[in-house]
Every structure is written in C-alpha cells, then in structure tokens.
Length: 376
Ligand SMILES: Cc1ncc(COP(=O)(O)O)c(C=O)c1O
Image (tube, rainbow, N blue to C red; front, side, top):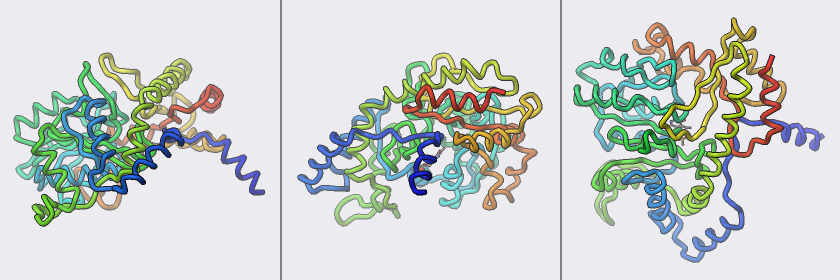
C-alpha cells in the first residue's frame, strides 16, 4: 500500500522543483561552518553571498534576508512610507500584506493585459494627498513599464519599491531591472529560480541605505549597545548562505534549461485554439520563472478550471497563479479600489490563467505528458 502511494507520488509533475546544490559540495561548506562555529550574524558565507549576488545581479548593494516578505516590510520601514500605497492585486498575497503590516492602506490599480504588471495609465487617477509610494511587481519576471512608473513617481514626489520576487537575473537592454525605483526586493523561496530554501534580499542604491537596512534586519542594533530603530530579526544564516553560494554557480544552467522548456511549450501551444501565452520581449534577458497560459473557455471549449482539474487528474500539477486576486481576500475586499469593476483586466487574467510546470529538471517525457493534457 505504502509502495503504491509512493509510486503515485513519483508520477506527479509538480509546478516547480527546487534547484539543489550538490550534496558533497554542500557538506564541504558545512564543514567550514562547523570549523568556524559562526553560524549566523553576518558570517563569512553571508558576506560572500551578498558580494557574489551584487556581481551576478549587476546591482550596487544587496542585503540578504531570511525570506522575501520581510525585505518588503523593511523597505517600507526604511523609506518611512505611510498613508496610502498604490499597488497591484495580481501578485502573491505577501505584496499587499507587507503594506498591511506597516499600517498602510493599499490602493489597487489594474494591470496591463500583455504583461500582467501594473498599468501605468491607471496610476495617476489613484493618487490622493495620502499617497506616498508605488509598489509594483515584475510579475512572472516580466519587467514593469519602469520608465512610465518613474515619471509618475517623480511628478508626484512618490517613492517606488519594486516587489521583484520573480525577477532574479532579469535584465532589460543589458541592465538589471533590480536597479529600478528606490528599492527592489527578491524572494529566494524554494519555488524560485534561485533559492536558499527560504530566503530573500533587498537591493538598494547606496551604502548608507544598506547600512540602515542592515540595522533594521537585526533588531535595529547599530552596535553592541545602541539600538537606532524598532528593527526586526530577518537575518540569513550561514547554512543557507552557503547553500546559496553553491546554487548561484548553477543558476545560469538552470535558467537555460527553463528556456528550452519554454521554447517547446510555445512550439506546440501556438496551434492550440483558445490557449494564449506570452512571447519573450526583445532586449529582455528572461529568467523563465513561470510559464503562464490563458484559457479562453469559448474558443478552447473548456474553462480554465476544467482544464486545471483535468491536468490534476493526470498528475500534472499546474498552479492558478494569481487566483484569486489579492483584492478579493477578506482583509482587502472592503476597499473601494478592490471592486472588480476597478480591476477588469486583473479579474479576467486571474480567471483564465494556469502556470504550467516550469523548472530545470523537466524531462522531454514530462513535457510531452503536460502538452498532451492541453492538446485537444
Ligand atoms: C510576488 C511575491 N512577493 C513576495 C513573495 C514572498 O516571498 P517569500 O515566500 O520568500 O516570503 C513571493 C513569494 O513567494 C512572491 O511571489
């Protein structure tokens, strides 16, 4: 019986699979940590990973965190954001929760149909005297319209914090999208292109801000006896920093493997009526973190949910990212900006999307199984 269940589990194709470091190499680094007996609080591997990530990501400063939610919360603290912040409902719920944890009112604006990112044309109408910042998301790693958002921010004197949880390594015209705005945050959760099991980071432009953020993620300690702010504990430890150093060495290979999966999906899906997907954007280095498809029920002859459950029956686990919209959750649905009439594009996308399995270890056989669930 147990064996049967195990076999069934082995047959499941999950939406993602974590990139794992080589166990022997990891063991060697663990030995270093054991020898040093310095296991957290800005240790050797923590410093090395911050430096290596800044180089890899082409950004000036990186501050490591224990997950991708706390840098969002801390960025708002570091920039002293209050009042109202304009954001997107089409994201993982942590984006809006970060505002809630800071006592900030989220104001949802709709998204663009061709990127899933915040629609810059909708921002100005949502600005009030209480607005202090904009928090867009490079959803699925597709870059937001950075220049249009910055123009509005400059015009109204607003800060911009990008939730770049999905945008590890994404570049536009040779420049990292992580340099946009006042700050960007990353998630290194197990489901992400680059993971440290749990983990995250904040990207900032100057050393002074990095210093302040480093205080904030360590209870506000600015020295042995001085506390300069009501900081939190969100430091990354040595073990996960070591894991991250090893994963960084193989992340390019993993991204290329994902790219090949995307190519194969597109080859086949272009001929399936009622299923649409996005192509790569010229000048963008994509990270292929997700592969969303959109189901037009009339043309396809089946609703998104019908396809989703049909796939599930065949042990192909897509995910309906990002359904339901954040604006529909009980904490937020009472807000004026949460009304579906205000968010028609996001509402439609949330109702039509399935993210297909996408990771570095998908085999040709897996891909054929996934495709066969969709071809009619
Ligand atoms: C867009 C977005 N923001 C924030 C987060 C939160 O990251 P974490 O799960 O590392 O706290 C996630 C993660 O899953 C995410 O997808």
